[in-house]
View 1 (cartoon, rainbow, N blue to C red):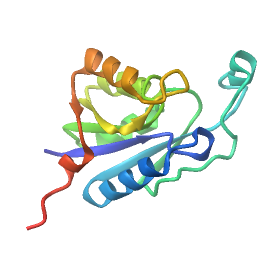
View 2: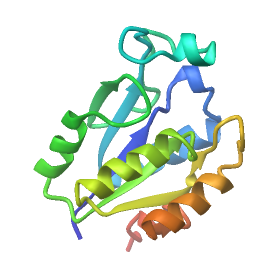
View 3: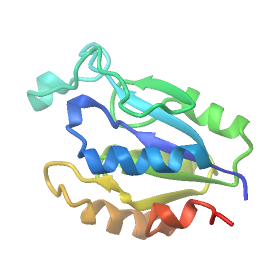
Length: 159
């Protein structure tokens, strides 16, 4: 099955746990990867005005994905969706920061584009509402169905 990994907002502004970064890095050699980085631009998304917080305007990905796309706001850009379509993937695996917001928004965008989103449950962290990510995983199951419990199941056996 042709698949790609979408890594959502694993960047300094969201304080990702070291374990999350190391686990994603362990999977990277085995799959085509795309990462998003959320940057602040108040003229495009009113983070400061509405939430009194914003990601850094110059934040960078902490994961060395094959392709990195900058976004402003919760959802991946049309360029991300177009790129994933160009890969002719049958399934897009999703991981990253804020399982109940940005990761979920990526799921909706992928679903609406017909790209079969599947969450990698042990490679997500939730927002400050639920840092465990359980809420986001439950919402993902409800809306999209596809969940892989462990990233290790995606790594081919050495033989």
